[in-house]
Structure formats: structure tokens, C-alpha cells
Image 1 (cartoon, one colour):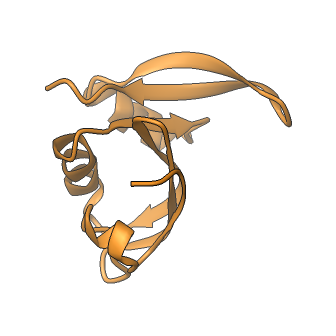
Image 2: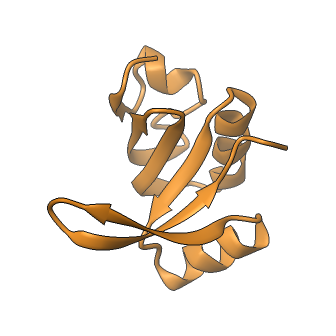
Length: 99
């Protein structure tokens, strides 16, 4: 899969079950990771995590709100920081695709 935005309900999105009946927003692929930067889940967030990991990708979540951070901590994500040319140092929570 090529890098770039993954719009909801597209063929690329459906590979992860990322459809408008379950989510709102978009994903982003870069390298071996899928970034979840802005989505609303209608109760299917963990299914999305599992689908992405099963497809062989890691997951990145930048600067999560408190509720999302608690979910990430429970699911074994690790807090890291990356440099972004536009925003400077950015908090990123990461889960590699190793089960």
C-alpha cells in the first residue's frame, strides 16, 4: 500500500474495516505505520487496532486526549516523541505490529 491519506470507505480503508458506519475521520500511512490522528469511533476502536496490526502495520497516535491515552496505555502503546518539521517535537504513542 502506498503512503498517504486513507480516506474512509475507500478500498484502502476497507482493508482495515475503516468504514463510515463505524468511524468518522481519516487514517494516514507512512512506511510500516498507520497513523490514527483524528477519528471518531462508534465503539469499534479496538477492532481497528487489531485489523491494522493483523495487516502487518504498526500504529501511531499523535498527542492523544486523556481518554484515548488511557486506552493506549491499557493496550500496550509506548509514549515516544518525534520531530516534525512543521510542529517541532510531537508526542506520539506507538504500538509495533508484533503480537
